Amino acid sequence: MTGEFETIRELFAPLAHPEWGRGLLDDVAVVPSRPGYDLILTKDALVEGVHFLPDDPLDTVAQKLLRVNLSDLAAKGAEPFGYLLASGWSPRCGWAEREEFVLGLARDQATYGVMLLGGDTVATPGPATFSVTMMGWTPRDAVVGRNGARAGDMVFVTGHVGDGRLGLMAAQGRLNLEPERLDALIEHYRRPTPQSAFAPVIRELATASVDVSDGLIADIGHIATASGVRIDLDLEQTPTSLAGRAWLDKRTDVQDALLQLATGGDDYELAFTVRPEDEARLRRLAEQALVRVTALGQVSEGSGVTVRHLGVPVSVQTPGWTHG
Image (cartoon, rainbow, N blue to C red; front, top):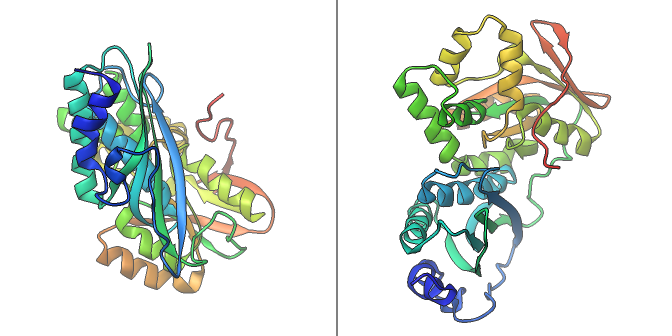
């Protein structure tokens, strides 16, 4: 029982918004307007063998799918509410695997307060492919773009950088660390935690913001390009997790190792700029939200991103991941 309509009726319909999703019996969702708010939309796809490994449990794939989109909304200061889902099931996705996938969706719907609104489900010879269009709200004209950074602003990042890259290496058996460190890294790679609860702080204080998906240096470069400024980064300030620090401690080429962490991607933290006079409030709000924020450098006149390590300029050949 793995047909398209059985999958929709038995698995996805219970996840749908009871009114706007129309029971998944129609070809559309109907979302009423929210006076005084803007509707924010974002879309990301996950492809087997590119964004997740062929043996990754499908519940974690579903959770990663929602979370990478939730991270985009958080970077805009948006409050999520619902999503459209497209599922391309490969031959390995039988009924039990589809149930597992939906269980992951259900868990994160409860965690992040979102509901399924509609979508499509198809079979494919492979690889398995999933895509979500996530929707959220911001007060009118309050969305935080990439183009608001100005000379003198400070550059911050939430959380830890590099666990996405290390998590992939751990999942592939290419890291030699203690088991608990490996488990933590694999968990981050499979189920990154979006900074959704930090979105109100971004909306209040950030002049520009982006989520760290392609790599810290690459994504900060997007802010620099959109804002028409130069961003100067101090590589030694790159924040690491306990597992990341354990990996760094084994390396003799610290600068190269930090570059790997800062260009690896799949971190789903938030990189953003803030006016210097707002730093104290930012740190207070971050402490209240139990979110680590780290100052990485500052914005100046010019263009692009310059990277220094202990005051010495560093050449960056590949700032992050790009798809062909």
